[in-house]
Length: 322
Image (cartoon, rainbow, N blue to C red):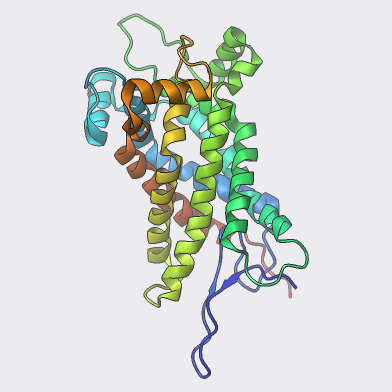
């Protein structure tokens, strides 16, 4: 029988039984795995909650990544302050609607599919706990599949975040998320909604694998150390660790994704061209532009998402029948 939870090393004779570690996408120990719909709903709620709480930092990150000349935006707090002062505090939540569209769809799919895909890779005859390689492969797969479907929501979010302050009397090009989808489809064709899907798949597959696999590994290690139990403090530290690893892995493709999606004049001829031009014109460190706000955002995003997910899963777990 395949196990559905990660167990810590077997204790010496007479020692206390080790705590069972519940991994991402799993139901509580001793219970059947959550149905896909329940896990999708829990993941969508958790991802949307994190999006609302951390979007100002994401807006600052995107502005810093797209800044090529000048020093209008300086640092995370400086960028947030500049945007709030020049465009009003509400501008920090530009792109919230497509951001929520994205999290409901992508967040629900990437985490909801994680356990079924991981179990598929393990196979029926797999014994023991899933290896790190299997976790990474499952994360890469669900991240790529999820964003392939949800990429238009990411494009609209970036376009709305980068619009900035307009001269008095100038109407916004994208007055709302729904109108933005229609405008982009009309001006750039239906395939225009999937502009930048290549780097977006690369970025989200890498970050999803880094987040989910590292969250599991950090959580298991913390509990194995005896310093933590499977509680809020453990989830908080595990979320921060997952966020840091995800930013280190995904920052270069995140910069390229933001630049291609924000490119309205055809400056870049695809992913490779964007990589080459960015490296040649700005140097390798340009791929880590906005690293601090990116980590501040992704670290806090992971903490908020995983903390919420752990609690919402309890609410959507079916009550066992007698």
